[in-house]
Length: 185
Image (tube, rainbow, N blue to C red; front, side):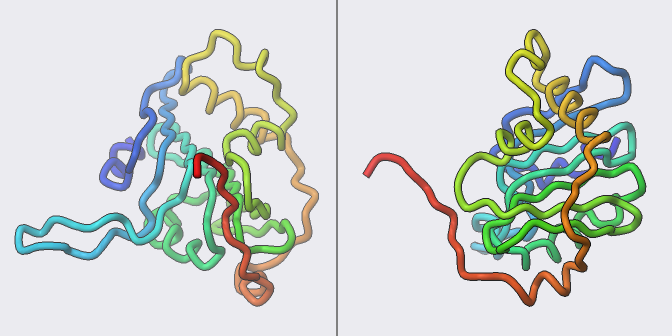
């Protein structure tokens, strides 16, 4: 199964579990895009150098159906492509809330729809739910994995009315925005 191959890239995992629909497995947590440097003689690594924050993944067998999360920089998408790009296919939906882009855009990677939406504050999961207009009641009584499946099913009919642009073109428009965090001081 696809998510078993990604297991070593799961970091600060919330869950990885099967959905009630046979063959579907979901994951939420952080997804390592670039591993940290080797920190000692035993080969232990430091913290990851880049992660897809607040990641949500859904696979059906060996097919990646949904990947979403927050990128601090559009430049990190190259790392994502190196670890998971081969699994982007027609039928894959990828939505990345990206801190350093000024405008939303969409592109196609290996026939997969890939959407980038600017987001400097907020939670990627909540923004994903808002994007497709789901409410708390839509998830009532569902397992964590089934919630990811519900979001994926809603995204399948989403038209994503954003301008088309290649990642290379979008990289020329990035800005210096940083993630806004709130909390105890």
